[in-house]
Amino acid sequence: MEVVVDPGVPPEDAQLIRDSGKVLTRMRRGWVPPPPPPAKRRGVGMIIAVVAAGAALMALGAMRGGVGLLLIFIGIPVLVAAFIRTDLSDDDDEAVVDRQIYEQLRWYEGRYVLADDLDESSRRLLARAQKAIKAVTESAVNMEGLLDDVRNSVMLPAQEWEIARLLAKLSSLRAKHRRTVTGAVTPEVAAVAEPLARALDSSEDAVVARVEALERYAANVAEAERAFRAHHQIEELRGRLHQYEELVAESGADGFAVPEIERLSRDADQLEQALRRSLNSAHEAFRYLEP
Image (cartoon, rainbow, N blue to C red; front, side, top):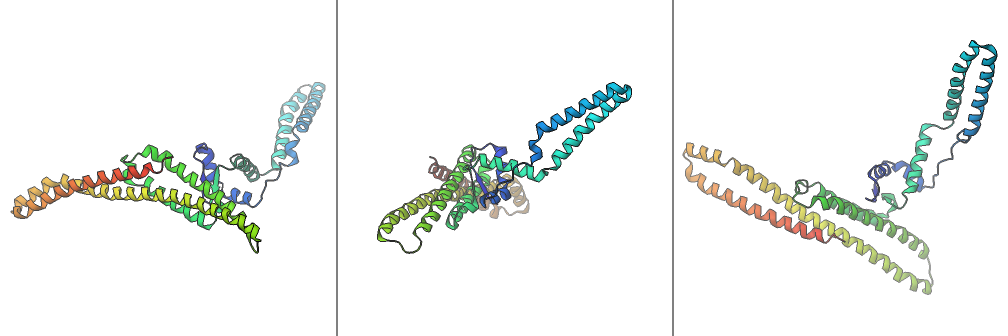
């Protein structure tokens, strides 16, 4: 299950949240882990029992000399191990892990959003935002550092979280609003409900504007990506230029080679300029995403 986590959550805890989709789904359906079994709450009684048994063995040892000492050294560890085995057997590993995950998820409630928390239109908007972010972060121009990759690594996850958080609130409030005004309503209720519905629509429009800004940024990055790849290919060809010149000179094809070589150089220069323009456009588009 897809989970968007607040970038402010520590990385290890964030990964635990992302990996806990099954537990999150159960929690959303009202699941609460059962309390630890009674054996877990018998710690004091267990200690008293072990101490009492140890005292009895020691008394026996005092009466029987060397054999008693042997009973002490063997008997007490056996008693402790027996109690521990009994205690652990009352609660299986999976239940313990689920309880720990539950507590962690409760602690971070409000700092993550499940895709299932969103209504259909909100899920589509979040998917658009994530697609744009992925296109930017996985682009060669970003990986090569031609964009501001440090700011991208901070700003883009923050944008994804803010969009997911707003869409979760919007989805929840929109569902409540629809339940309230479903069916016949009086004119008085309609008079109150209509402006509130417009407020919901206005909030959605604001989130759409954020998503569209991300998409414009991704489109500019895609243009820079195309120019970067073409420029890289031209540079590879230009790096082998002397081999082409040598070949055409040896073959007597000089008349063909000169104009083609000149065109190669012109194309390389034009692509370099196009790359610069595309990168400048991408940087300008990025500024619209800044708070």
